[in-house]
Length: 333
Ligand SMILES: NC(=O)c1ccc[n+]([C@@H]2O[C@H](COP(=O)([O-])OP(=O)(O)OC[C@H]3O[C@@H](n4cnc5c(N)ncnc54)[C@H](OP(=O)(O)O)[C@@H]3O)[C@@H](O)[C@H]2O)c1
Image 1 (cartoon, rainbow, N blue to C red):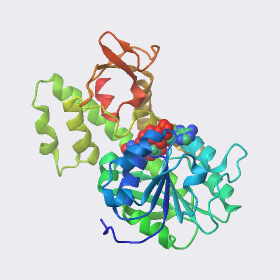
Image 2 (cartoon, rainbow, N blue to C red):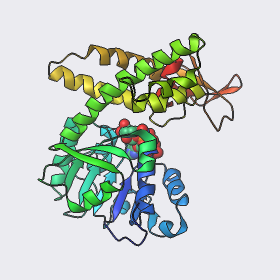
Image 3 (cartoon, rainbow, N blue to C red):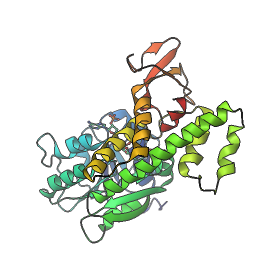
Image 4 (spheres, rainbow, N blue to C red):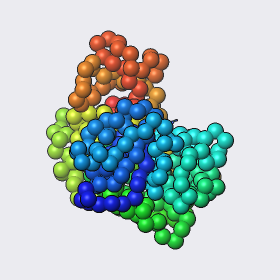
């Protein structure tokens, strides 16, 4: 990480959920001036509160996105999906809604559909503001460590300098084409992640039902053809029953729905991914019972259907929506 003395682009971060929160913290700890906004202000305040004192003085939390983007060179959006990104950046009229300065760049790190990315680009063009769609892979751990795979769509020959400087703190960037291509690359990433995660969850269930030492499996498979970040990160979570959201299942389902639409327009079938999507949809549609007060690892058991109001205490446990659990909860199906 760069030294605190570094000056650099002023960055506004809109959306400090799981991914945006870790990114904002990394950028602030690298010494950049950061201006944070989150719909639920407490999350942005928590990010700022977790910073070292010297970083905190260069980080501010704002009550609305209009205020947060003031004077920013780079506006990084990490909202949940395309509709949220469009509504914050373009507003209801679909035209640029925020006072972002001419010449600044917006970097959307969320996973959205390629068509949503090009719509946002076209909306921002009126302001003289460029968009890069730069979705990421590597999960919460990658975001925390600045080790994300960043797949960027960019309309200019080179990524603008201030954007490169910001992304360098977050991971490794590869430009895969014009705006929209980054989002498509992420959908392809999600096809592979979904197929792997469902297969890992099924293999885990067989291992456990067979009475073998499940903890031995990731090490035994390391370096072989079945090895992957999904295996190494999610199998141990399945073994611990840790379903706290690092990558919430509802976001994977959103990506698979976007992918399915795109693949069908390209006249390509994806039968394996379609089966994975059904499993993820099953998890998202379920309700999970979580022991009350389980602040640490979130052991959970799935209940039928999703009828009960999520979050209400029932039968000695809290109920949460399956979609809010980590994708490692596929092991519960
Ligand atoms: N988590 C991962 O491992 C991971 C990895 C790669 C990519 N991604 C992608 O990154 C994006 C963010 O994921 P995340 O895991 O950080 O999700 P998250 O923790 O659920 O955060 C979502 C963020 O979007 C905000 N938001 C949602 N709807 C909004 C609206 N209508 N208006 C304004 N703000 C809105 C939320 O605000 P509130 O706090 O007020 O709800 C929150 O800041 C998603 O597109 C996801 O697919 C996630």
